[in-house]
Image (cartoon, rainbow, N blue to C red; front, side, top):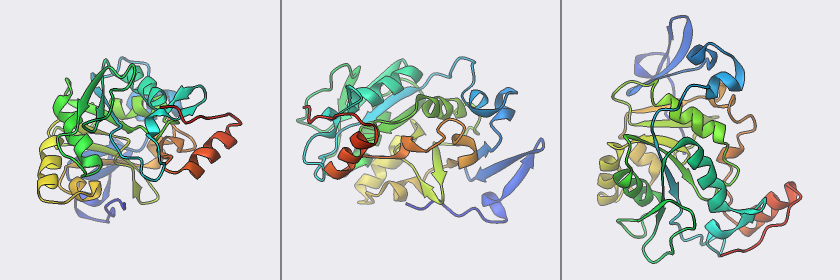
Length: 257
């Protein structure tokens, strides 16, 4: 999926606010200097030491895992299941963590709350809509179950950005090299209505629904402070990718669950 191009003029241009470059979108802007947020520099300033704003945590774990051939939630890496890896990261930023599963799937161990997709066979939009409708707070940090290497610092950064964007913003989405990462992102509860409408209209691509949201796109110079190698966005979809993940880490995985 390609991020909207940032043009030279209009709401897609770059401007200066207090001497700091910002990236503007129809819904708000994101500072590109993490040190400006807290008066420090590097990853420490990006993540910050102040208490995080209240956000919910949504684990998207209702996919069919057709290419993997097994439920990816039960694959293990570094002694934990994929689901446990992501849930641990979400619990670090939220006191309201829930897992979204499709009807008929078993609830995940230690998942907090489990909710089920309101629609069948429509892809991740169903999980996004269902999770946002069930969450307790106004914003949710969302992450897919097949991203076991998601960095807690990245999720903390996204959560902190909910306090930095304009009131009209509905989505905070990392972007790199023109590629958006809408499944590891933050969404306001108002986005649920947009996702539901997209499902009803048959527009099932997340990028299509995202085009109807007021979104702020977080550039690399911001999120790299919290995830230097971008591994938070590396999703494991096939047995070959899973074996490479384990081999690269010199660990043994297993088909658990």
